[in-house]
Amino acid sequence: MTKLLLSLHVLAAVLAVGPVTVAASMFPKTLRRAHSGAPEDSEALAGLRTLHRICRVYAGIGVAVPVFGFATASSLDVLGSGWLITSIVLTTAAAAILGLLILPAQDNALTAAQTPGAAPGTGPVVHSAARLAMLTGVFNLLWATVTVLMIVRPGSTTGA
Image 1: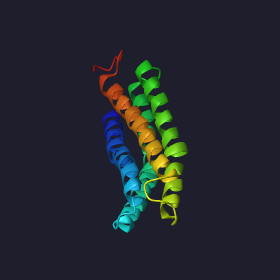
Image 2: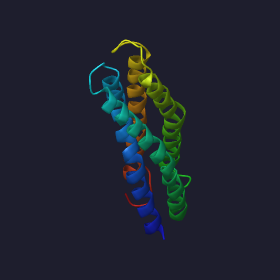
Image 3: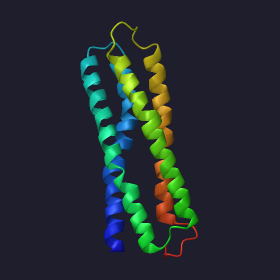
């Protein structure tokens, strides 16, 4: 049962977190392109909508990652391990950044990008693109750290 739970946990992480990290990382550059005043603005706006939808949908699917993770940790009897507790804290931080900062900022940026009248390449859209790039970088760094902790498991007694 442990191998099944671990397999589901890893698959959920790859299939849910991977698309969010890629789509969220692409959003700021696409936002800048959508607001550049270039002829491909409509394509960039469509891209923004798609990237935001990917982030929202896969963030919801990503709830499976900690669910399978807790089941796996319980099965392995490692719920009290420091590396796991650290991973849980970092995962919670990543989820909070995504749900409370990135997704709402994407909503606002998408609305602003679709509002005609702002001068291209200036204003709140450019500022929000820079902020989104920074938030996404922190989000990705947290997930990379969790991944390393899951592989290395410092102090683990599970044989890593």
